[in-house]
Amino acid sequence: MSTTLSLPLTRPPRATVLQKWLTPSLCDLFLLAFIAWSFMTSGNGWSRLLWDGDTSLHTAIGRWVLDRGQIPVTDPFSFTLPGAPWLAVEWGTGVLFAALLHAFGLKGIVFLCGTVLAALITVLLRTMLTAGADVLFSIVMVLFASNALSLHYHARPHLFTLLFLAITAWVITKDRQQPTRLIWLLPLLTVLWVNLHPGFAILFAYLGVLVAGSAIEWKLGNGSRARTMRYARLTLICAAATFLNPFGWKLHAEVGSYFQATGMTDLLQEFQAPTFRSSPQLFFLLFLLAGLALCGLFLSQRRVVEPLLILGLAYASLTSVRHSTVFVVLVAPLIAAELSRYWRNWVDRQPRHSAARILDALSTEKRPAFSRGSLWMLAGLAAIFFLTPEGQWPGGFDRELFPVEMAAKHPELAGSRVFTSEQWADYLLLRNYPRQTVFYDDRSFYGEKMFRAAQNLMNGGAGWQATLDRYHTDLVLIPTGSPLSARLRESPAWSVIDKNTTAELFSRAGVR
Image (cartoon, rainbow, N blue to C red):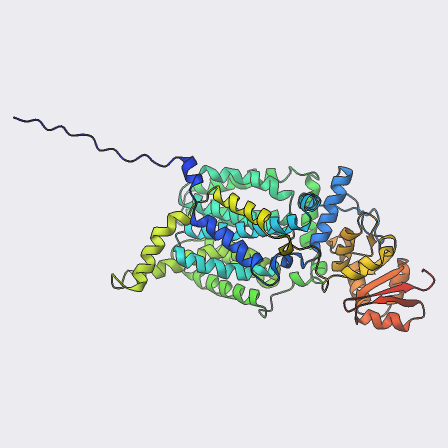
């Protein structure tokens, strides 16, 4: 009688955490490819991030903070409201921009903001996958989302709000499927958020919808009390975290006053209703229509959070195009997940060797590689930063959008009381820091009355001379051929000093 020895079957050891982080993933490649496509192969390259004067303004604020070791609570930049109460609520971004400018020049600022945008799009992709969307379908959807979001592809503090909101949506999507301890990192994210951009207020609109919707679902038998209380506690902890800022409760009062300044926001283009004429707005329209169409489906499934979120954000987006980016960040994953379910139902009815089945199998196979990152992502970012030829990085601001040549030719601008547009004022504040003061700039703290006066002045409206006299303005720097230019040329009190294709510089008679 023979005896057969049987050896126990053993599974191959799981990859260690370190091995996973050292193994490249398709998620890494996607992020790096987004940067390459958006900023290294397009005609405008990295410079497209510097088309908004806010970059200069926030960098100048950051330089002020670093030079003095304190955060301003009164205005240091205007000669019309010198010393007026003002809170630098975006001081953290300003300091970050100023430090990067000092260390690397404009290259540092645009690289950071380009990386934030790439991270935003990558997190949006990961959220779609977490929600159950098909990989290939998600890639197409996230590229559509990028087109809709490109409306605000500028080196400004609001990029951090979009990124942090995407991270929040990703974590909450995971937590609603299976409770995770990651959700308790959101209060730490809130502390960082509150010191970079006042858009943190959007977090509480999102959490409020989550709590209210979860409570209704609980009553409808499609949720639980535990889940509702979990998100209520999260909201309270995040709210407490917002007080970890240099201004305390005054920051909340400042943000609250911002929402009440309807007359002020009516004067700013980014707060106007969408016109659906530009490419980004047309892509947003696609997401808007798809999201609204899905609300009935969600309600039929006794899902309340999603329709509340979609309808609330739709209203906000239709009153202000600025909020369209928030709509896309939060709603695109919902759309991708639902449309993927229809796609799979259709694929299941196709022949085994059909193109649809092959694509679905490929998508399933590649899902793990798109669902994680690795240290190779950091290596790729370092390669882009250090190995990209210097000629591809911006050496300055666009000469057609800003008075670059005029400011270089006339250093007296820095010591004068100059009126110019808010965008150009932002540029001058950084270029001629710390000597430059301006009539007004892009900060909303000037109020509706000042912005209306400046708008009337730029249009050469009635009383333009009195406005300049009231604030003892010495120089006027305006776009060539603007309405105010004609008024200044007609007035014996003003004379033209210099002119080029971008700007005209006028001086009050007797000043020079």
